[in-house]
Image (cartoon, rainbow, N blue to C red; front, side, top):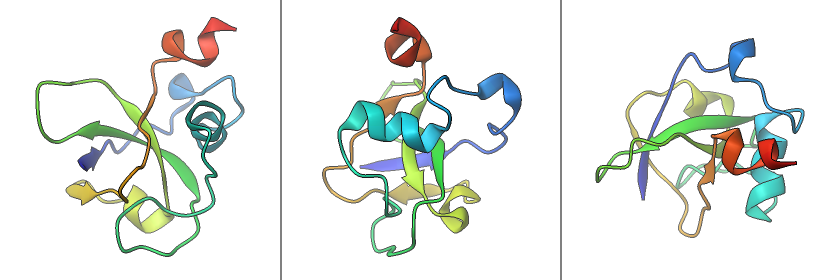
Length: 97
């Protein structure tokens, strides 16, 4: 699956109750957030990046672990097979608590 990174989403208005977006992804994916999920990248995941799917009509925002380099990219990024897209919309996740 390919996603596009949404740059400029680290502002306080996009903060999460989980403490960080990386922790948010871990909490709701059930997967470890230790490695960047860009296909072919072996760097350590540094952030929970806000992304959108590149194909289809889905305009929702999702969170995926990325290294700093992939978090700065704006073009389409292929994800590691099996990577879970966790909704960034807190009303679907941590806002329910």
